[in-house]
Image (cartoon, rainbow, N blue to C red; front, side, top):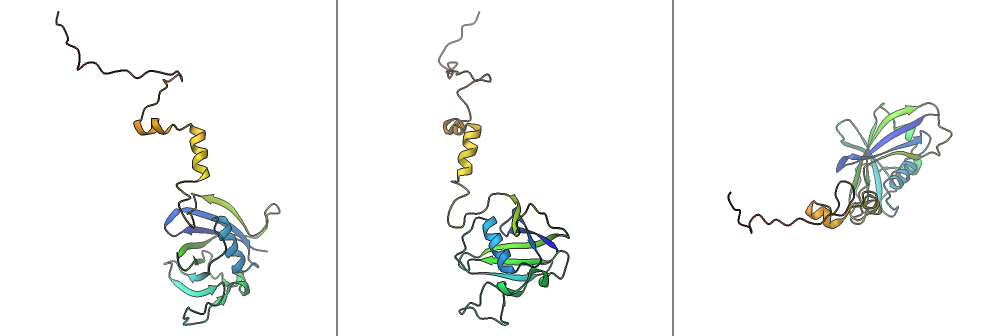
Length: 191
């Protein structure tokens, strides 16, 4: 049984990606659900894959379903009916994944490894590597996220200290009082 490892890049920032592993016998619908789960997206919108090449040009469409309002030159393949292994023609096979046709979330999906043996500790399909904070599907999760609160707690960030660039403690953690600048107010006597 071949295990396919895909790297799924967010189109707007290639430093944000997820590595997913999936059996070659799984279908594109399984990959679709795995990508959504790895990026913490819901499953409420339309989606499609496109076969692609090294230049990331869109080829044959593999759609979640046939959408009535979309005009096709060629009817799309349906995700649930197409096994991943049947579409792997290249050791670096690429696909473009588009989710939510209103927002057009676009991900570049690239085959980065094929393993002959499955890992008994992993339930396939699965996300095995996460890099970068996923974009927020509906808002500003990246700015106001629970992970930001964890960072603030971990480093004990004081908003006032960040704004002024100074803390109220010295190197030993002792409280210090702000020194007043009096050089302009006093007259210096010459000896």
